[in-house]
Image 1 (cartoon, rainbow, N blue to C red):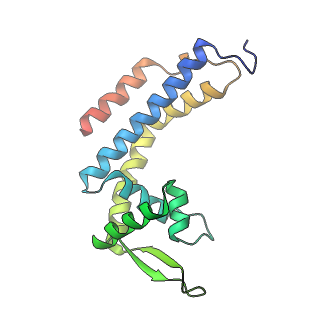
Image 2 (image 1 turned 90 degrees about the vertical axis):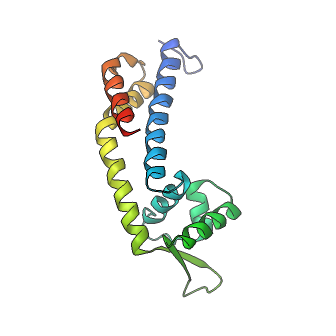
Length: 162
């Protein structure tokens, strides 16, 4: 049993496996976005916009925070998405200094298509990711819960998409 300040080889393996599973999903996401003509960050922006928690306004600073990027990078991303008619800007009614971002019907349609693909992928590969995370945060780290066969099947699915 490890102390809180110790880390075992099983812990390293669990961390590495978790990182691997996340990276595989991100790779899928990047490929799916590119297949629709978006760069991955544009898809992430559209998803962050549509998925804002209730009561949050889609301001530039809010979206920059959700994407963990700088304000000026968010503005550039918005400019590109407005140019392609995925989103539009409007002024906030109570505070005309603030810009609010909205999805256009075209942006909604593309986001729905990509989100359905992502949900399907997570339904397929998500259980492996969850088991890996559970193994990682368990007191007794046991990465044997995630079988190599499951990982290889998931990899084959990703290769079919390529």
